[in-house]
Structure formats: structure tokens, C-alpha cells
Length: 106
Image (tube, rainbow, N blue to C red; front, side, top):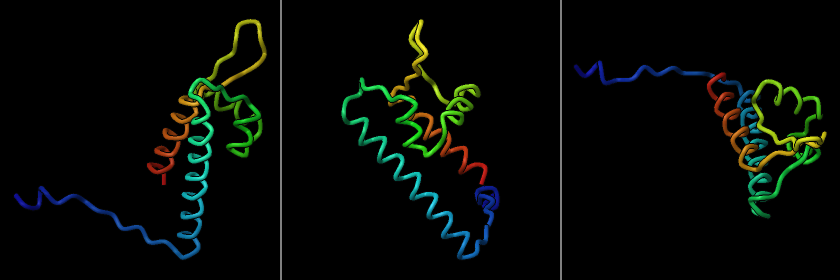
């Protein structure tokens, strides 16, 4: 009966360089989340534009387009306008969901 209660555990061995890279990635994610939270404190009704997200994620507008096309990143496009805006809560959701995907992939 006791052996049924013991969960299977896997051991992953990393080199020092791999561990340092992992820590660096976690710090980058933490910095991005902190920047997002700091900017969202300006007002929950504030919207972000492509330029804001490109700076935040250090990516191109094409990357944002890919994320929108794949349905990973929610956006607002006012009728009759070419402007694309993002709600803070949608960006937070994007970060959290992609952070959990990275953890399950790795």
C-alpha cells in the first residue's frame, strides 16, 4: 500500500553553465513581469501598443503578429483603424501561460 503513495520522481542533472543559463532566464522573466506590473499600476484601463510590447519583450512587430495569428496574444483593433492595442491583463495572461508552457516543455 505504501508504494502506491510514493510519487515517481525524476532527477535531472545540469552542468554549471546550464544552471546559470536557467537562472538567467528566470531572472529575465521576473524582470519582464515586474515591468509589466509596474506599468499596470499606472492604471488598469491603460492600453499598450505594439511599441510597448516590443520594448517589453525585446521582440519585433512581426513576432507580435505571429503571436496574434496563433491566438496566443489577445488584442484590440478598433473598427476602421489599423491601430492594435493590448490590455494589461491580456499581456499578463500571455506571460503566465507561456511561462507555464516553458516549464512543462523543459
